[in-house]
Length: 499
Ligand code: BES
Ligand code: ZN
Ligand code: ZN
Image 1 (spheres, rainbow, N blue to C red):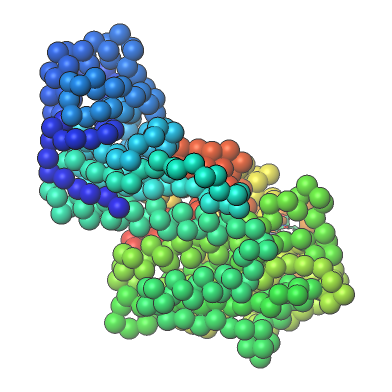
Image 2 (cartoon, protein in one colour):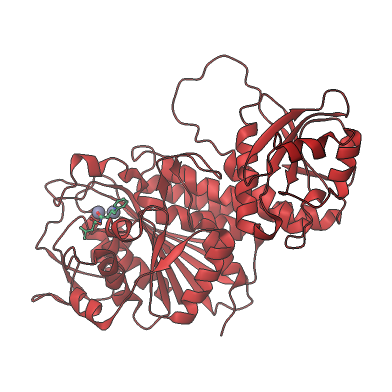
């Protein structure tokens, strides 16, 4: 995708060149100084007069007017040099990349030398750019009839640099992997429920597994029945579509030990079941497999970067439907672990399928668990639409997930989880647990329920109900699925070190 060149971009034939600008530099240095010279000091004047803004994320397209081989310069404002960081740099690159999708060009280039500031090395800038470019220019193809007009699209992207070619190349490959894995997760989330059934998710996982040589296990309904995964089966009971328990294993160590379990909620459509959702709440429930998408996106990144870690990914895939066979409120079901559950709300189905998936991840040797799920509307009430809620039984493991989330630029906020919360999910008169102890703090209740199945295994729960989709476009992508947590999970796995 990216071509790395050790050449001077101003002497190359380039249709469109992205150049970063910091606010109020004492004087231009490096490439910018050279550029200013080429334009007889005009660049300095433009910045001084404010005609060319270096404000964070402002994007100005200026025609080269024959003074250079570069046809257009795209100046992207990076704000104050001391305020820039890896995440904000990606946002600025994303903003610039987005703007360029509206200009009819085939060739895009970026001059990365101008980004060598004290805080960000050239290879980090290359990683940030490649990830941001791939994410920002993502489009979901959709189902509209195609127009016959020929499309002009960016075909080549060149990175001009005076830094070490191999290092920049590697960084661009890593950034591309992160961007592509996130985009795959977005596409899965954007696919409607009739286009992505449990069987399609299983097929997708199978192809991903074959591509990256993962060990693959896809349990069908009768195998799930034989194992006694009663919680998972209860959710599937009203569906015409069979469920699948998807398992992917990546072994990056000599021995199968210190295994990280990634568990993703794979509800391909959530009607709520007999505790049916209101008509406004049901729209958008195709995204209820956002956790599965994040895990599969992360596995794609892991498959490409091949860290020295052991990972087992487990995805319970089904829809939550209504029929004469469907499970009902008041039903009591027996989970794979043996714990019985009184169903008070069939719309609290995510925790049921995850209960069996978490237990199954442990059966596959998971020593650490991270589950990701569009689990509760409650997390949106608590934290809004831009923060993923977290719960944990292990401070040290949570710190590792949190660090990865900082690096990915994906916001996580931890919710409290106390003995009282555990008592509430254990509060059924006729079963070991109940799946819906009431609306008070119900994002915590959702997580606490899953915690009953993680038991002593260090575990972090991530509730992405608010963050898996977005209603409006943003610097790194369009409205729709965000692919949130794919990068955080992959970074968490890559950086993971045993205590
Ligand atoms: N899939 C929903 C959660 C959700 C809500 C995801 C909004 C994305 C956007 C989940 O299965 C659900 O319905 N949760 C209930 C739980 C309640 C019945 C305890 C909820 O949050 O209302
Ligand atoms: Zn639900
Ligand atoms: Zn759900």
